[in-house]
Image (cartoon, rainbow, N blue to C red; front, side, top):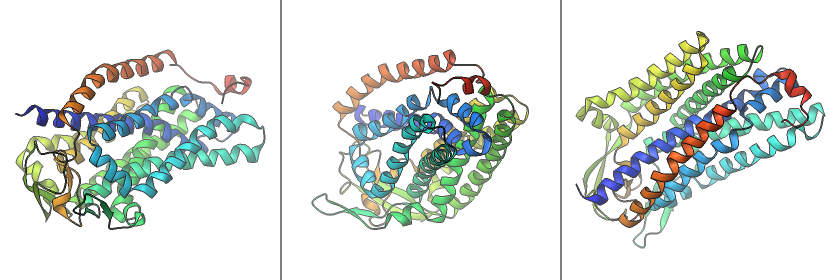
Amino acid sequence: MDLYVILKLIWAGLLCVLLIGLGLMVGMDMGVGTLLRFIGRTDGERRTALNIIGPHWDGNQVWFILGGGAIFAAFPTLYATSFSVFYVVMILLLFSMILRPVAFEYRSKADARLWRASWDWVFLFSGFLPMFVYGAAFGNILQGVGYHFNWTGQYFQDGSFLSYLLNPFAILCGLMAVSLSVMQGGVMLMIRAENPIYARARRYASCAGVIAAALFLIGGVWVRGMRGFVLEQGDPAMPANPMHGQQVSMQVGAWLNNYALHPVLWLLPVVGVVSMLAGVAFVRANKPSVAWWMGLGSWLGTIGTVAAAMFPFFMPSTTNPDQSLTIWNSSASQYGLTCMLAVALVFVPLILCYTSWCYYVMRGKVRTEDIIKDTHSY
């Protein structure tokens, strides 16, 4: 196999890993933000929840940067087109994420009930919206996106951002991502909090896991009757030019073709559903540490299922299917992919080691009475 093709496949795999890490780590602290007003009945309890993720939330945002940076450098055509198609949605996403650090820093600056309650709503908004958009993005690309290029390579958008964000399937995918986020956030609160926060987090995490599994199964049935895309002709070693070199057709149920050709791929959705339900079982059995790892399996199964179904597509075009962006026609040069791989092999393990060390050092329960006495905590 050509080295250039191998590099494209490696970076497509690494992108999946980064998206899984983003869902797991960022989803965890976003889930705590979404739950904040529900698991904390007093100001002290809410401060406890914030201090559980306080040492980690900014480090978790590294996964956002890694994901965006990988797309930018490894698949520049995909980066330019997708960020243009979803421009308004990206602005909403960035706005919500800007509010998040502001809320952390300003919530406890004034000891006023209305002031702190207002920032608590900001936490809910900035926790719910990013994960909803994250899931809705997967729903949108599965349906295909309305865009095309003219002969000069200029991009044209053929649909409004509301049609991307608010169509029924995208909403289902968005709510599923939020459910997984709430489950992971609830599990994190169980690991580090005591009652009554522990009991409330246990209840919400359990419900969220069941909802996520149900939505995942409904989405699978939905995809079966959806129009998918089939790459009829295309050279894996082609340059990054979406206007030439491939032929794509649209067929109902086409997203299941790869599963028909390679039945072993059915293990991915099975891993996803089993991990979600097993996570619920471990939550109810009061084993949150094991349930946390089930969250990893849930995201791996979910994103792996989408990747296996769509391969080799990244962002199909409903306007001109032949101009759909794939792994083959939206990648960087062989030299660029090689240099990036060398850097990734050094820094990704370092990030994983540092993150693991931080969680190890800051393990243990966070007690409400200690937080109330500590004027320097969140």
